[in-house]
Length: 171
Image (tube, rainbow, N blue to C red):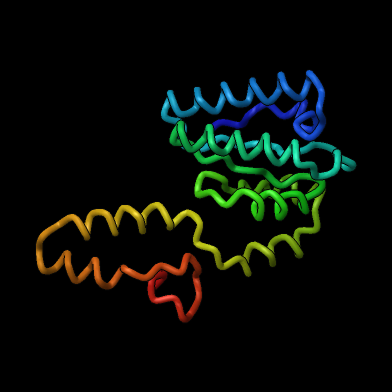
């Protein structure tokens, strides 16, 4: 795991030369993570108690960073900071198995409301990091020609992507 630079994180959301340069640097560093076999790159999506507002430009830059992460075989993990609402917006706008979350309990203790955030994590039933394993299972089971693998392929055909009582694929 590598932690990406964060001193200019707010510049990602603003149309400036500094934001462009910071974006290019992050793109390069995510590629280097992949080249060196580092599976996770942690990113501060913003910084400070009053970061810039969510913008189409910032969302697009983080989407393109996520695409770079995917091409590089890396998960871009967004870290919780002062203002965590932006995380919900980014995860809703960028549905990718290469966009993850890095929970920093120190940040939460200093900046957050730990009870609310921990409850949100506890109630989150998305199984984001299991999706690649399910794909691998499906690919392996469907390409094999044995009866036991055919049964496994049939049993794993349905994938809800959620950890719930009714989700056969999660059990």
